[in-house]
Amino acid sequence: MTVRTIEWRAGEVILIDQRRLPRKEVYRVCRNYRQVAQAIRTMVVRGAPAIGVAAAMGVALGARRIRHPKSVGSVMERVFRTLEDTRPTAVNLHWALARMRRTYEENKDGGLELLKQRLEDEAMEIYEDDIAANRRLGGLGAGLLKGSRRILTHCNAGALATAGYGTALGVLRAMKESGAAIDEVFVDETRPFLQGSRLTAWELLKEEIPVTLITDSMMGYVMQSRQVDAVVVGADRVAANGDVANKIGTYTVAVLAQRHGVPFYVACPTSTVDLGCPSGADIPIEQRSQDEVTHIAGSRIAPDGVHTLNPAFDVTDHSLVSAIITEKAVVTPPYKKNLRAVCSSTSLRYT
Ligand SMILES: CSC[C@@H](O)[C@@H](O)C(=O)COP(=O)(O)O
Image (cartoon, rainbow, N blue to C red):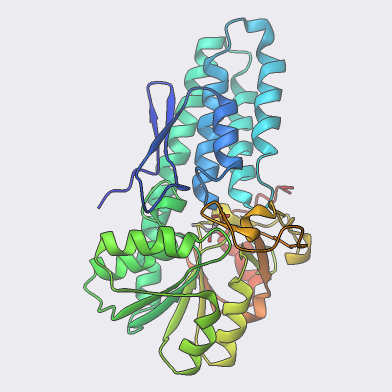
């Protein structure tokens, strides 16, 4: 099955609208960088690697529409700033924009047409690199999870959350491709945005991987009743000490996994590791609209005027993480030393 999450087509960015899944497969066409920024902000496209790729394509779109060489500097600064400000937690967004900015700096004096081409090439390379990284980490993860037949995942870390293939779901895909038996994948629905029930369940069904949907409040029950052999989730940012920011509720899964002796794995490309961020306490946590909590699919489910909280992510302490599966290696504790060794030594600080 091929899910086309994101595509560059002759100067347009085509995105599957993830807000409409699973009921409708609708594709949105972004013709300028502002539309890409809006798509990221409103979760048409979501998932750390996918929003990084979308932002990179947004930069290429921004450059493409420049007509006068004199305005390059001011327009490009606006493009970078607008895309930077879309979502704060997923470091892949800032990582991809840093890559695009380097390309911009290296080519800004070489003529407008060349600059446009170089930015488009770089965005396409970020796209291809992400798929390649997912495939590699999927293979490494499949080796690590060998023998785990009942797996639990949270949120959506699939093809929809990346340029393709997926991270946590990439591991499951690679397991299936290698002939490993998967008896059951528990997917919790992941309130409030329901990435688990709407997106992960949809992807796994299409992939013909056995999926059992549970509500978030059932996680403890399935672990306590010994129905789960391993947990694998994605990540939005991994700090230098191995603390992991991921979708709200991940911390709860990790605590339960430790309580019940279930290994808790994080699957992410090294573009999700932020060596410039010392610990989870330094990761900015996005706070989203209260409507996501008070409404489901447009219907109000809470009384008018109720106070809500809507942090989109939480941080799982590295002591709860059994291993971090990247495209370069499976990283185990001590994370501070081993993450630095595995990732490149470049240590940019992304905010
Ligand atoms: C490979 S995706 C990893 C994470 O980005 C994913 O688990 C997640 O938390 C997505 O959050 P979202 O708010 O849907 O963008």
